[in-house]
Image (cartoon, rainbow, N blue to C red; front, side, top):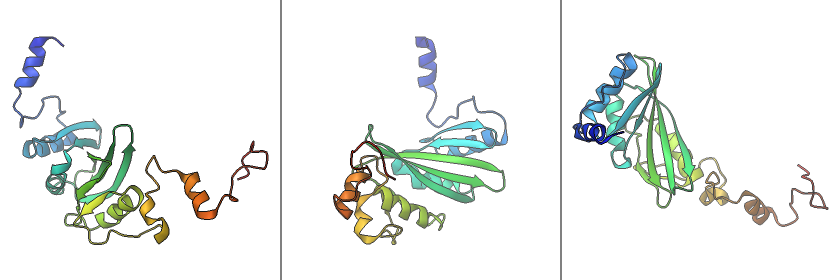
Length: 191
């Protein structure tokens, strides 16, 4: 990229949608949302699939706007980027009227991870937020039911899906040193 191209990219106003969006229902959906949310990034991944990246402090605002076109929250999943010290939350949305699947991605620091709840937009979010809280330790501010959900109370504060969770150490602490997955010669797994 030469300097003239770089200047053209930097000179583009923040709220202007990039012209590379296709003239398809997916492209029009992305354009519609980006015109109203210039803080977000959006793209068409393929037919019936779009993607957005949103800063964590604006994710609730963006999802509320997106709910006008995407009526269903299908899932909230979490990715632990341990080397970057972040969790990435992926809100998967479905537009019943347009038959388009959207991924809305945001990243928060692993330490003291907090996001606002989206239960006020989609009540089903309660289940996904409780799961992300229990397994990763993410706090969803405004969700009144964060607490033991799937795990037993003695395991609740462990957050076992974090990449730095020591599963074997936890099992040995819970069941004692006699519980070992190796045979006596320590050469073969017995399970």
